[in-house]
Image (cartoon, rainbow over all chains, first blue to last red; front, top):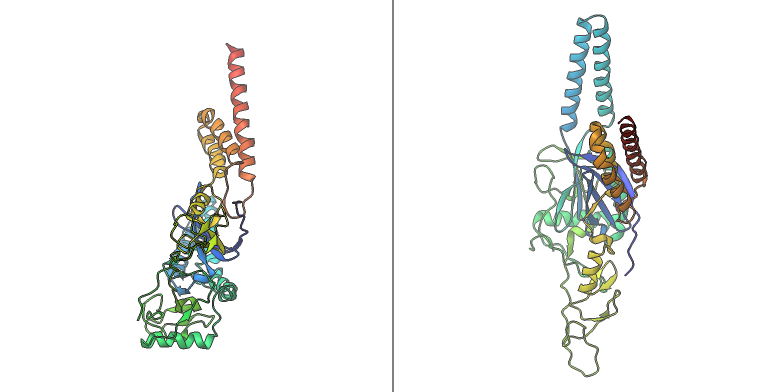
Length: 190
Length: 192
């Protein structure tokens, strides 16, 4: 059995935590979430045919960081105005650095928390942590995901969502014959 | 069929269809948080039951390699063995037997089953660079960095595109450290 070679395309955005850097890649039939800790990479795959929903919600993290950088800029500028000579130059440079960080942070736009949902898991996508970027990536992925699943018009989708909301059982979509059986867990049946 | 309604990712209240798939953020009617919910047809997909293996009744019907009493429905794309519906593992359009799937995972031939990889090139570069903060250690770490850099040529690297620059840098820096040590030892020998 020959080894496979799958080509991936990097999607915009990088998420990071204390020990990991997270990036998202687009494969031929799946999304690949790569969490790199320097010497190791951990992979999570989300097949387009299995993706049930992608949700985005605005978060306050961006505002908090803007406030922090703004406060640091003002503090450094205030100190610079009270001292003279070399100290003035040093504190001005520090204030300038904080201002650049504030400007960059502000330019990236509001922050968000993006999650992807399949039948068996709901996972955050840390690389899509900016609202603008998340919208851009979702707009790019939407036709690909829809193309990998049973065709359904937006009005029919909306109708089914309302049916589930009302608690009514929507008419089922059954896998066409010949396709692989989906052995994944499903939400509780009505 | 699903009975779980589409929920707001913040307050978990159920959302009407009009607020989903809008392509732009909208405010949740309950918590007022800006949300964007994209729902796909898989949300309503019903899991079809897996096929059951049929028992052989007639003579001359091919049987499964693993279950002699069961009717073969397909052959394994890896080893060619006949498989019943139970043993047939449909993997991205390929029909594999459990043994081929297991060996493919073990040997790294099925990339989709790999959840973790070690990046030997990154390890080699770090082993070459980090000890330079405390130079005497490089006498030990430089050969280790060279070893890691060499084995990185044979071991699989990241599944995503990645250049070999780290390996080459490690193969330049670590030997230079060893040359430095040879020079130091040579000078010490000359002085004594």
